[in-house]
Picture 1 (cartoon, one colour):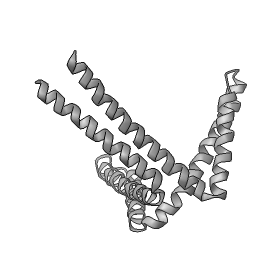
Picture 2: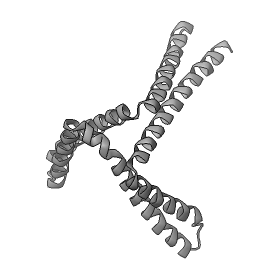
Picture 3: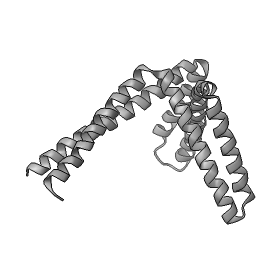
Length: 175
């Protein structure tokens, strides 16, 4: 690889990093648009996963895969066709997920305690998950802010890591 090829490759890290960092900040300041974008993304993912299940169902002669594929495609189409409703329901879906995980962690902590293993962190995480779920269910705006804050933070950090890789590649090229 020539030096100019390597340098051009590292410029993509810088460009990607800047774009992602700006997108992360955009997500923070535009939570409604971000939730709608996430709803569209999830709807498309359901359609793609459903199509994959549908395809696999014919290979394995599986009625269950066929059913899951059809359901996923239908859910995906409903999500994409009703982006506003999907975006508005994401905090509730997130809350139900937190509740389920919290209950599982709480239950697991008692099993860990019974087996003489470290259990306090699992107990604390379970209780916090359950409390957080009820907080979101009581005020879905908290869930919407949480989802977009976490999305924005992840995207921003991803961008900063890409920018860091650019400078690392530049430094390595000078050695």
